[in-house]
Amino acid sequence: MKAYLYDRLMSTIERRKLHQVRKLLLSSIGGRVVEFGAGTGVNFALYSEEAEVTAIEPDNTLREEALKKIGERRISLIDASAEELPFEDDTFDHVVITLALCTIPDPSRAIGEAKRVCRRGGTLLILEHIRNENKLLALLQDILTPPWKIFAIGCHLNRDTLSLIEENSFERISLNYFFGRNFVWGSYRNIK
Ligand SMILES: C[S@@+](CC[C@H](N)C(=O)[O-])C[C@H]1O[C@@H](n2cnc3c(N)ncnc32)[C@H](O)[C@@H]1O
Image (cartoon, protein in one colour):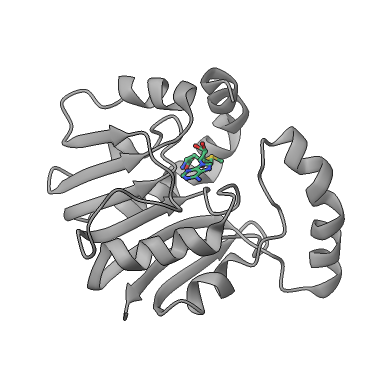
């Protein structure tokens, strides 16, 4: 995906809502942080000085763009996939995943890796779009996902991301729904 195109496509929704949500989610966390699927590095400027961030991004073009946003920040960026992380167990205090669980090919394995590399009692912070609770709207998401996936480079509109997280020993701390309960941001405690 061309980084320029991604940032352009997202600019309106970022300005309207996502930037504010990202800020609420990320600006007060400190300690060792791993971010999955950092894309063009849209979150980088929002981390505090107290956060030591390791970001992973498997797409070369997006990674190059994200590199430019690091500057003097305590952020390292590596080429890796969320399903197979090159980190020891319990390495991080926080795992950050924003708008990536919809795209990661095997989200179940990625959540398993999140649980493994995050210490017990650490947190998983998410911003995601989710499967609609309304059965008819969820069916519509199922129908739209195949064409949408082609347009939106692998993004699944219909993934039941919250169930996936909650079935994997993450305990809900807080969740905030927006855009008609199609999006959510919040945090979970790792109770592995
Ligand atoms: C929709 S973009 C979101 C980018 C950014 N996190 C954000 O909040 O805007 C999805 C990201 O997931 C990344 N991705 C896809 N497969 C992945 C995988 N197996 N492991 C980690 N990231 C992956 C993509 O390269 C892309 O950067």
